[in-house]
Amino acid sequence: MSSANSSTKTQAGWKVIMKRELAAYFSSPIAYIVGCFFLLFSGFVLFSTFFAIRRAELRNFFQMLPIIFSLFIPALSMRMFSEERRSGSFETLLTLPVSTVDVVLGKYLATFTAALLMLVPTLFYVLTCRIFGSPDMGPIAGGYIGSVLLCAAFTAIGLYASSTTRNQIIAFFIAFAICIVLSLISSFEVLLPGVLVNFVTFISASSHFDSISRGIVDTRDIIYFVSLAAVFFVLTVRSIENSRRG
Image (cartoon, rainbow, N blue to C red; front, side):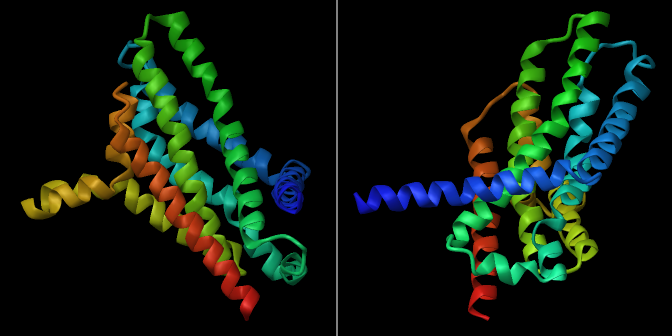
């Protein structure tokens, strides 16, 4: 019975934090501003070549998505811990009767949900492609599966960056730097010696995302994104636990 009560408390803990953070997101202009700029930027990427190449497809959109996410997901996540550290409410958060995992999981799921909601309006792009052509739905479905996995990984990176500093701008640039390196590193494969190419391909988020967005859902690509999210989630938990001890 006691273990069941403990499980209920743990579940309630992260749920309460998640709901609080989502309410904070959508009661402030941040989520709307980031979402609008994301749609404007991604829409420009899509439609700037949409009519030029006269081909109804989302290939260009998905090719650029890791770079776009590198910019916008850190913007969503930068305030998660940094704002609480700056305002002094971080100490109050640490005294709540919830575990560190609860705190991190609640904030992670809130940010991940906000990132997915930012992606939802892009389904309009699919409708546009269907109206103007007959696109292959396999790569489109793969692209959105990859987008969800990319969101999960980059959200964990953004949350970790936010847990390391009280300055939101610094948190943004730390997360942006990590995400953009993972997104662009495969572009430099031609400049590297052969022995490093396989390693670069392995750590490149774009390489794994491109594979899924072609409609090839490989277990290795899924494991990569899940592992990346898990590693940075654990690093965030450790960062918060260190703050609690301090």
